[in-house]
Image (cartoon, rainbow, N blue to C red; front, side):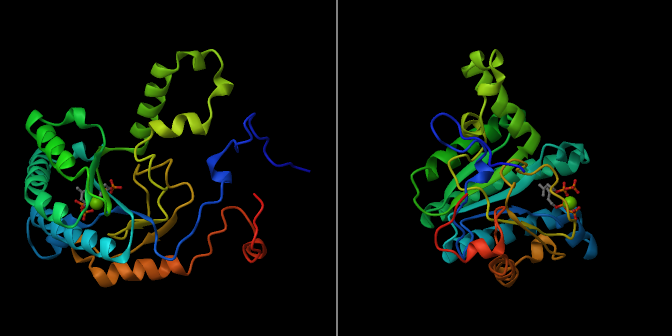
Length: 266
Ligand code: IPE
Ligand code: IPE
Ligand code: MG
């Protein structure tokens, strides 16, 4: 017979996946891989760049609808650590579009009380882009509404590795006692650790893969895949994803019968 995992000295569970999160009807945190811009454009005999431009417009609308629906946090994948492999002209177009969007959208974000965050390895970006990021982030930092995190030059493996590197830099003693390393110690070093983990993951564009996005944080997230290409992902498509989410039974390891009981053991 197996047994429940042991608890640490201070009686906190050893694995965060053993804690049972609250499940609300509207996902508190939505994570989206915005995929399909290139195909959207190609289908219309347009350059791929036209798809990326339309992608920004789709994001603007999704941000607004998430805020209206009471979503607390929205995290979107805009440029992966692997996207540098794309043709140079597409990469530089995407960087230019990102810069332009940062400058153009900040006013509307402020008005809508959206707090903007940028997550990823920013060291690869030009000084000009980094400055624009700092400016947009600081201008929205005190906003109290939706937390919008844009992942750029982000990879889930980078997130884990850099968290581990920074933890060990702060706590070199852990190299001598590796068993003292716990999830609670590592978690604060991961991106977006102050937010609830995503309840709902959406990937548009038909591919059914995670593509190195939020590998740690998606451990118990409900996954939703749609063939809709990102520029076509509108309110109706978002609400369809929420409706699918509301049909899910989030058991977090328990049985269905346990969910019916008011007090839950973990
Ligand atoms: C997603 O759309 C945007 C980025 C990765 C920057 P794609 O550009 O990947 O579009 P498809 O998948 O080629 O259609
Ligand atoms: C994932 O899209 C990254 C973003 C949407 C930014 P990709 O289109 O680059 O994903 P893969 O490489 O096809 O999995
Ligand atoms: Mg793609």
